[in-house]
Image (tube, rainbow, N blue to C red; front, side):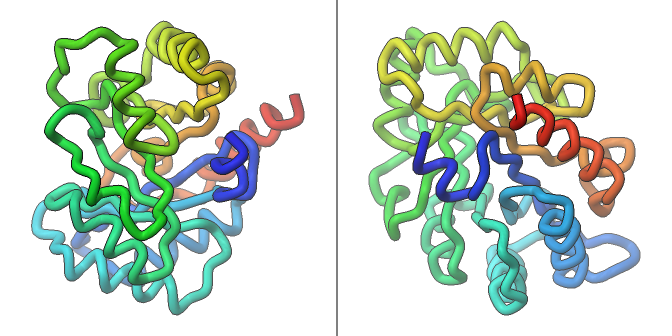
Length: 238
């Protein structure tokens, strides 16, 4: 847990998504920098640069990471390359990123080369859109803990609330194996549920909630970010 808090500089860190997109208006790199600025100014702890949308290339991810590095933001930055996860650590390291996210660290979706360059690994277990392993929860958690530094789990899809029952089960399972191993909720966090979700999770990845109407093509909305972070600060006080 200490490594997680040291990496992001906060208890219960909130990590915002940079969903790279070619919008009708605006320009991808400048839009990403605007979103980073909102995140930093509103107290978000980290940001993940991700090739979420079609027609976004690995070169696009590199260009955005280069621009973020050159802008000297203070918040912690990482990478999730969906089209080729094995490149995430190398790309993040090349542009002074500190962590990677993998949607799955289960079964054949992971190999040891993905833990290179000293990157902190957020690893998906029971993650949205990933096939079920068919194993027991204890097996999946033990396997995941051996492959990442914090386990990330979700509900059934983007923007869909992660069931509290699932978070409670994962929290209990992790603590049975190694008390305090970090658990991150990776989808569906919003202003209405963030306090309850953070009772079980040690942090959250927030993407679509920060966009108007949950539209992942839209720009991050400062008001939505501010409202959620105000609620998170109240959680941290408690």
